[in-house]
Length: 331
Image (cartoon, rainbow, N blue to C red; front, side, top):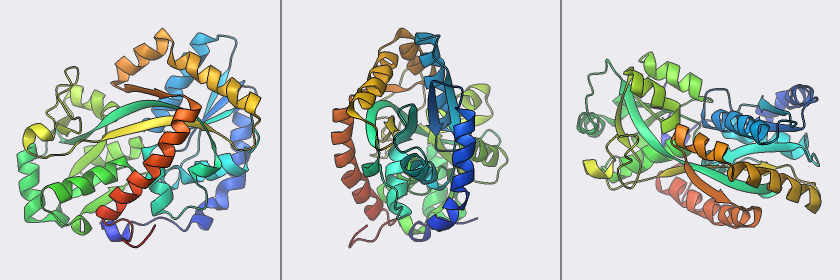
């Protein structure tokens, strides 16, 4: 399946939302007995799902009396889950949703009527570098091999990653630009969850995989995947994968993640959620979680996170225009 940049497909947003009422009811039922629900707006196995489950484990360890339920609501780069938080959970003081760079891009590429302007920023939490991998049996042995094929015939190299317009997609487009390949010729195949992407990569259904380090780390360490490059600005000792910059590509990128709450909550309810998340983020258990997953600590308070989002929206829009996912004249 080939998906060029200028035609990155999304199901029509209204069609995707056809299942909204059903999914909302399921999410309410799943979290009915819990003190807090954390929505992962993606299928299981990916970075948002990992973040939501890590939060659950740490929140319950910090406060054993608290029950935390994780609810997966996949679709359209997180914008289905975002729409649900805005409409189905409006005013709910016991709901958080994992968000991040992927969603900022997906909102723009999908022309989503649901946007991050409509939710309540609670905290930015983590950052993660992207890694480029191939199956262990691939004839591509190095980044040099990959770039040689990519330059010779860009469309013959298929890149498997997360949703169109997300961090994985942006990295491939920026890489194409950096090595002299037209981004519009990139063959990018989006998947809605890390599990789906990993299966496609291991099965040889795509040439190359792109995702956050934590999503591929166990397979790289087990030898089933070969890591060619990481998008860090400098070598990461605990990971040991060469950076793009070390291999002649002047490019780095970090994929951040945070949490937001529904609209319509009171200031007091917002403070309570923010205090809960901050206590989690400052805890030794969370520090251990960051180390275990190879995540960066990028914690920001609600006000800092809200200001960051305003700037990030413009930055992402500029990148998406540069790589051909948005028209030059506007969103």
